[in-house]
Amino acid sequence: MIFAAGKGTRLQPFTNNHPKALALVNGVSLLERNIRYLQSYGIQDFVINVHHFGEQIVDFLKKNNNFNCKIEISVEKELLETGGGLVFAKSLLQDGEDFIIQNADILTDLNIAELVNYHTQNNDFVTLAVSERLSSRKLLFNDEMILRGWLNVATGEQRLAEHNKGFRALAFSGVHCVNPKIFDKIRRTGKFSIMEEYLDMMLSERIHGFLHQANLIDVGKPESIEQAALIFK
Image 1 (tube, rainbow, N blue to C red):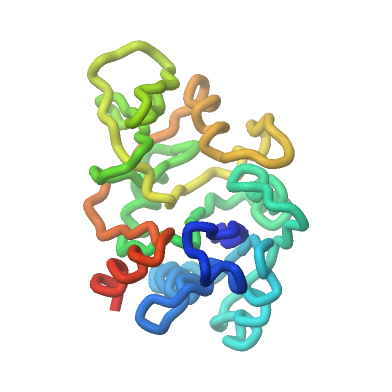
Image 2 (image 1 turned 90 degrees about the horizontal axis):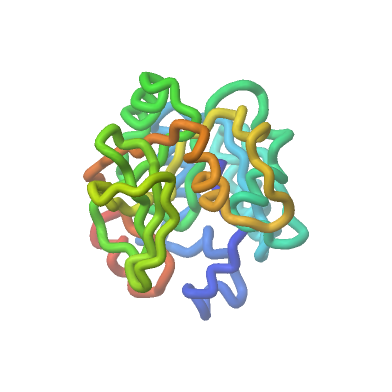
């Protein structure tokens, strides 16, 4: 699933008239880059949620013949954020197979096959791609790389599953591998962040972090497009 519904306010003025997923890096949209990136690992079935100028995304996909793969669109009449958007697309994702979630505004060369293998070997409920990079919010992991908390770096606010001074603080990469049984565990409804559910679920489920050193750019601001253009040709 590719999350492409957001308003992308940090990318204004482009997003005043376009969805952020169609922002260009070296002449190629974020959405096309991520579809082709995932296709390079054999992924051919996609669910894409849309809201802000969603019809432009639908038209773009039709123009490109859906990149010769199966793409289903989850149209959100109101913006539901990551958790609400996932639940809204439940009928398109609950066929029993684990699936990848990726934010449309993340560009990375993370090895998806290694993430999936790690997820499978651990028989994981959820696996979150994480890295050592600057971020205003960090996820906290124990020595076994199991999620045990969350930290707001600026304010010091924390949410912890247990008290431990030895947690490793890592930045979430916006890519996760998820078992569809998550739909039986989510308790929130409407508009909410999936991270809120993960922080609740860490008390009862094993959520691993997959540590990587891949290139990763959160293309959320005009200057990050320039930065991404230097890495992703």
